[in-house]
Structure formats: C-alpha cells, structure tokens
Image 1 (cartoon, helix red, strand yellow):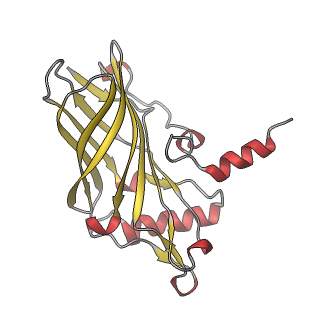
Image 2: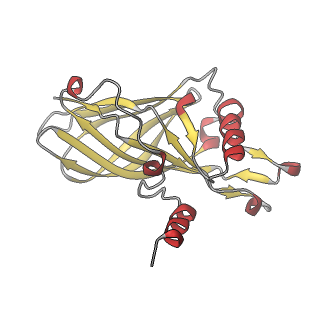
Length: 212
C-alpha cells in the first residue's frame, strides 16, 4: 500500500549557537517548504520503507523575526553552507520498517551534500484508515556530512553549533491524487510550533501579548 506525503506535513531544522561568543548569535528555526515522498506499507511485515526528499533551496529561515537577518542567514545557508547549486536535494530513507501505531525506532539514511550517514530516529506513529502520521526528532552533526557550520559576524563571533535538530510531523495518505495540486504551504507560524523545535522566544512573546 503506497502512502504519499501530504503537503501539510512539517519538517523543521533548529540550529544552536556555539563558540565563546555564541551568545552574539541566535537560535534559528528553518522550515522545509517542499518536502515530498512516500511510505510503502506492507501490513504485518517488516518490509515497509520510507523515501523522502526536499529541494535544498526550499529551506527558509523563520526566526528570529528580523527580516534583514532572515534574508542574510537564508542566503548564507543556501550558498555558503548547503551549496544548493551543486547539491539541489536532501534525501531521507529508511528500510525494513515494521509500521504500527506507537513508538517505532529506525535507522534513517540521511543524505546531505552528497554524503549519506545513518542516524537513529524514534517516531511516534499513528495509523488511520487511510493515513499514517509520524512525529519525532533526531539530531545530526553537520561536519559528519562534510558541511562547515555557519560562522559570521565581526571576526566570526556568530557561530552555529555543529549539531542540529530535525523535527518532523509527517502525514502520509492513500490516493495522493485526491489531495495534491496546489494546496497552500504550511503557514510559518505552524512550522515554529513543531514539537522539539518550538521557537521559545516566539512562544514567550505570544504569551506576553495574550490578554489577561
């Protein structure tokens, strides 16, 4: 049974700060605007498999909410870190899956900048009549993929930590033809609230604005 990723699925990357002057930078939440793929589900067997891909130029920095910095960091991420002209796609693959509701552990083959590494992932899976939903997080070190973490600012004092966190809330459905075709992208606010990658600064600001 083939389940295809629904356009409302969310995949987010959260970076940390590093270095002696790491406080001079920010934590960034990065949204993948165009994740696609499929889950081939074999009920009762450990032969299900997952394939996902995203165009690297669809990655968009969302926080902090400073338009100039977002533009600058997004451009640096695409040109200096991910080299999207040379490596246009990032892929995710997992095999020998026993898809069932509840916690599911897998070895995910993550490919960035042409290098593939396996990372352990634990997902919370919910099986529906015509859908499969998976939520979870995993981490990866950029240097394991030959990626040099971003460094900028005066004398390189703004640094991004080597380890980044991927957070996902993926929905796959049967009969993609019924749901495909021009749905609007997930709102930016939704991307900053994916469990594991919640933008705490935004949550604090929203709470402060909430009427008493």
